[in-house]
Image (cartoon, rainbow, N blue to C red):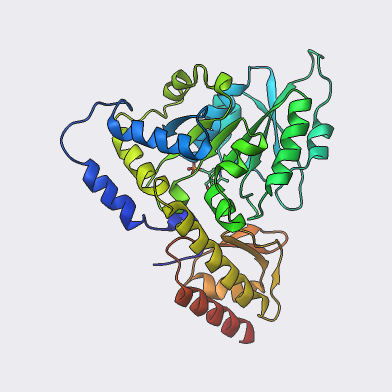
Length: 341
Ligand SMILES: Cc1ncc(COP(=O)(O)O)c(C=O)c1O
């Protein structure tokens, strides 16, 4: 089965699987004190700068919760887009586990602006109100749109002026960097992000994400928080080996660039289907479109994909590192046929 439902539906890249098999040899010290973890951390310092500190974790929600816990005290709050994964897809973990209030902002494209942040920073010093402490942005956003380096830098400048730190949910950071033709650090370290959730799973790993602290002061105590948040792997080498496979070479870029190219091809095909409308800029590996409902449901059985916004009848179609041009073309032909019928 192949689908356009989610990049999480995709298989793992063979290089990742091979790296796991190589690591599966003899004994290694547990809980991240192994040579694979040391190498993965070194590779991530190469991407994000010598001062950065990475902690490997199991999943993206965990990376976000550890990041928030590292920055926010119990009376502090997090500003985010209302469509942010932390707000709508983490089962309330930021509120329940990190214990913060989320201050949400409606956005048309999933992206926050400096004005959005300014508008949410109110009642500072008023003990009756939560105190905003962190801005979290998603790169690429839940709508498949991306922040340019300039946009992130402007947000970070505003946040820092207001005394807030910046977190990036970089579940699909690789797709943004591949699309912009830049390095990972160019979208993070160089533009003022303080802590990053770095994605691996959606781009060809089996599982594994990292919390990367760009501000070493925020990393203090983070190892304890990772353990408390149940995100410390005992057999850490098996997370680390995947990171080495993904980020030592340009596998992260090749996989992401391919997924992006497949989404561009898919968007071109959908744009030509009568009655279909692309609703968001296609800047990464996702395509958002309003499709004639009968036709959408007719093809969904063979090519699963999710409805993103029921009221607007907007569908979300995701491509992955293993989506093929033939699959995109076959889906487009099936959709066109369903629309014609
Ligand atoms: C934007 C974003 N952040 C984080 C995640 C990570 O979530 P999970 O905890 O399922 O790994 C996802 C996964 O869908 C995501 O889309």
